[in-house]
Image (cartoon, rainbow, N blue to C red):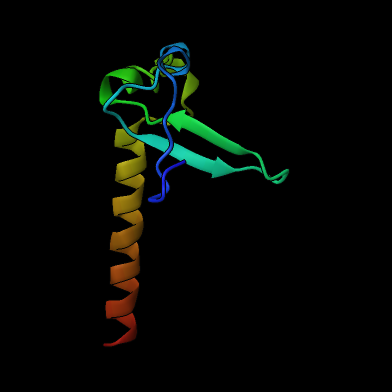
Length: 84
C-alpha cells in the first residue's frame, strides 16, 4: 500500500475477478475485519438483469399508475370537501 492509501491489484487477480484497469471498485469491510474488493458493474454488465416473464408481476405498471392516480384524486377531493 502506498502512502496515499493506494493498493496495486496484480494483473492475474484483476483478470480473474473482472476488475478493469482503469476501472472502479467497491471496497467493503466484513464483520470479521476482512476487506472485500469488487468491480463496479458497468451498464453493459447490468443489461437484462431485471428481465423476467411478464406473468411474474402481480400488476403491470399501467395498473399501478392508474390506482395511484385514483388515490391522489380521491385524497384531493376529500381535502376540498373538508375545506368547503
